[in-house]
Image (tube, rainbow, N blue to C red):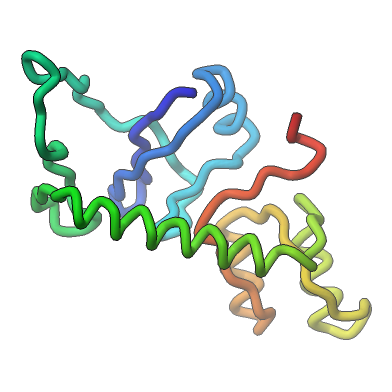
Length: 160
């Protein structure tokens, strides 16, 4: 596994993403599968990363300062805050997993099927899939009820 700091072009949000390899990152970027989790911008690229250099004797007691999502301020998290953050992220992941339990992956056909359900051309059901940011905005403008997921979803056919 490899971690990259990514940055969206529209708002400059910096966020972390994990990939199986550098090739996996390049493949997902080429297929348009990357988006900013804060604003949904699909124009995402690698951000400048500072190497993590361990303190002498590997004796660091607190996490390095992190850049905040909007104000650029630096913060340091202690062990208690890190634990709470991990619990919060796990709770969000569990909620998403539960919400998708009875949902059908429709891939890039999401916008078409969501519209068909909205206009009564297809029976309503829970679906999830991929859609470009502009198309998601168009769906919302039409009154189609859609919402972004907090975490990326790997289609079952892509899992090994």
